[in-house]
Amino acid sequence: MSSWEEYSESIERSKEYHHRYHRAVSHPVRKEILRLILKGLSEEEIARALNLSKSELDYHLNVLIQGFCVKKVEGKLLLTQEGMVVEHL
Image (cartoon, rainbow, N blue to C red; front, top):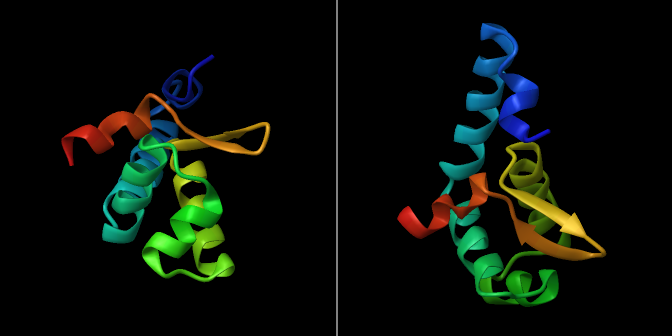
């Protein structure tokens, strides 16, 4: 089941989905993180490129994960379908 399907069962859940997604993609640092993930950079490379501490990067990644934009698979960051919006930001 996709992220949207999980949250489309009620108006309240739909609002939560959109709130979390909007929060994730509306921050300039997170937009840049999405672009760098699309380019295939690792967490360490992203932190270095954006001059972020590990805790700062972890915070932004958590928002992106909670916002349905990013997932971790075997330790690697991947964009979800929702995260592919980066191509249009």
